[in-house]
Amino acid sequence: MHLSTSFGYVIAIVIGLLINEYSRQRPTRIIRLGQIFQIGLSHQLTRFSLVFIWWWLGWHFLGSLQPI
Image (cartoon, rainbow, N blue to C red):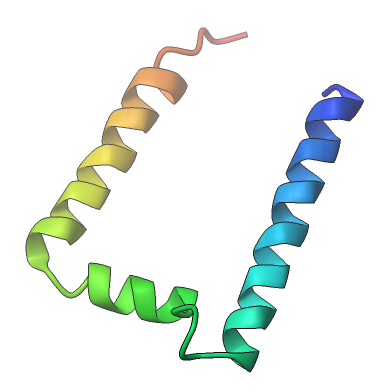
């Protein structure tokens, strides 16, 4: 993996942690990630769609790998 790609992942994780900490300090300004999942996954269609998307990604990207 290239250094720039690794650096990008680290930056994305740090930004996510900072947003999470800010949402804990000021809960009226930013909704917490746990609340987003709770609201989003409360519908059966959303849960089914999420499972279907994961299945599709696995089938097309992991299932198409050639054995060594």
